[in-house]
Image (cartoon, rainbow, N blue to C red; front, side, top):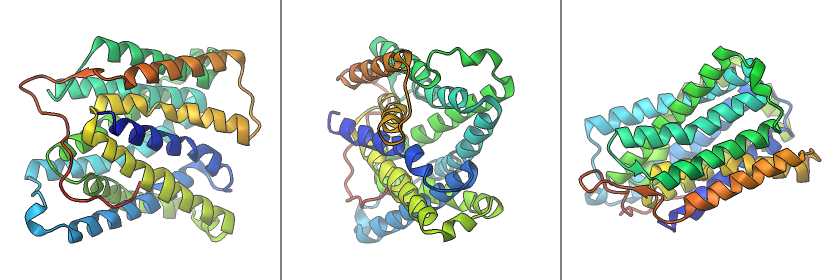
Length: 313
């Protein structure tokens, strides 16, 4: 289990750099997200094909119909998450949209995983996750109580985004637990999502990609914060419960906040610093062994994969 924690935290660190990197490109947020997903998904899809071709035929697990359907639905969820997130941010503002979408993800992941009979979160996981989500909320809002005038429809979209995130990470975890290579699973999910998001990129205007700064930013977002990050996340899902991985991913807003202070000269209030400390404490607690109990008759944790996995998000 311990070996998967650094991989998931590293993925969250990469995700946390996306906002700072995105500020360097003169592109709309939806177009930037679409380019990130198209490039990252294409990289993951290509990586998955390489892995499958290099793996001896007898060592490639055959995905059943149910797994294939789940992966297709997961790819739709990846693309839909992007749209829900930015629609929510547009209606509620960045702070509330981010807190609700990112903060609800681990909660939905734990609940869905439990309902699916895969793993039952412990009381310690619940308390640590609650602390991490609360710290995230305080960090992002600065304790300013912005939720009072939030748009109900926007909050609903953000919650839907959190649910979609939970769905596709559980799909990934169960496919990896069934013996599929994590690189292949992520390639299927994000390669499919890239196809779905390509029209969005075209419709939102990709002209900014013709400028060197825009192209370099898109390449970094696609290759590092999507391709490499999700490959690391998939590696983590081999050995740690999906609920634990989802909570550890809350390191993303912490990294983004610190980078904002260091690189963009942003200011954090004392309350936000306190939220950052609470978030860090929750992550430390959830990273300790024994945060999730697996039922004796349920699906076991994801085993170590047999085929080699190539590098991608």
